[in-house]
Amino acid sequence: MDTESLIRGLAGDAKQAGPRLSAVLAGALAVAVAVAGLAFFAMLGPRPDIALAAETPRFLFKFVVTLALALTAAGAFSALARPGAPVAWRLLAAAPLLVLAAVAVELLLVPQDQWEARWIGANAAQCLTFIPLIALGPLAILLWAMRRGAPTRPRAAGALAGLLAGGIAATFYAAHCADDSPLFVATWYTLAIVLLTAVGATAGARLLRW
Amino acid sequence: MTEAEETELARLLRAALGGDEKAYAAFLSRVAALVRGFARRRIEHGVEPEDIVQETLLAIHTKRHTWRSDAPVRPWIFAIARYKVIDAFRRRGRHIEVDIENFADTLAEPERESASPREVERALERLPSGQRQVVSSISVEGRSIAETARALGMSETAVRVALHRGLAAIARGSN
Image (cartoon, rainbow over all chains, first blue to last red; front, side, top):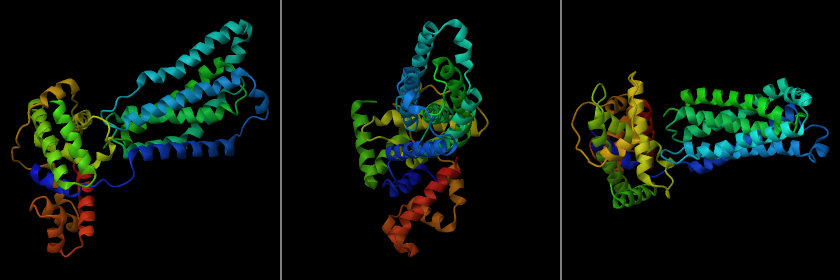
């Protein structure tokens, strides 16, 4: 078939079918949050003293970080679905910078002999287990939605899906976890989310080609 | 590579997404000429430049919903074409770095097609016969949707559906 013929065929199929990409991405994000919420309440639920905890800055700061991560990741994720669209990579530094600043403040406020106890916490293994578990459903949904897009960097798009799923899962998990120190968050939350990002990147390189 | 061209491409694609088949044909012809210029100059061994042109057109077609109608259209076209060049080499077991800056420059000069067998043609041959008849009636024989419907004794809607499915399958098959 020569190119003129191909163009004639494609032109006959001009009218756009199916939902808009922005609707697909927004819908997938909403479903991903809902699925993460269901998994969270089914497996863990909020900690019993959440009303008290909600009055402490360390507990609240966990949500500042995880929400900053989820929001910036959602922006970059959506941009990666469209060829040639500018990606706000720099905004992704917001959550890590917030954590680093909080770690610095924590090290100033807390006596050195308590550093290790706060860093290791009581829930490291739980954190490394449940953040990925809560994130698995959202990751699958986000990868599926990305297939409707046209990621010219499939591995990066997959990584961002993992990062975003990790941010959503960490936001829920933070409501359960009794370890609120930035030293704990900077280590164990980060490890779990990096793991998800790596899984997303590997999946993206395989599943997101078009 | 002027602002006027950007404006014209965006206008054509916007009209095309609303269902204007003439505007879509004009848009795709311009894109084909632009991508051909790039493919001829950049690609020497093992990959037929016209295959890149056709794979890019199919990719633009199946992914046309990823263009935001308020975004510039040329960066969108370049990004898809560049992805398809890299993809073509990847599938043939090679790796290539494509510099998007060079791409934007070389895209300036449209070129004409040369004839030879295409991957798209092979993908067409693998279609179920109903879809193949519809696609080749419209593409190769140049009939309209209405003429094809009469010739094959189908409704126009059925022709559109078969064309859409056939093109989607070709886009997947030539990958």
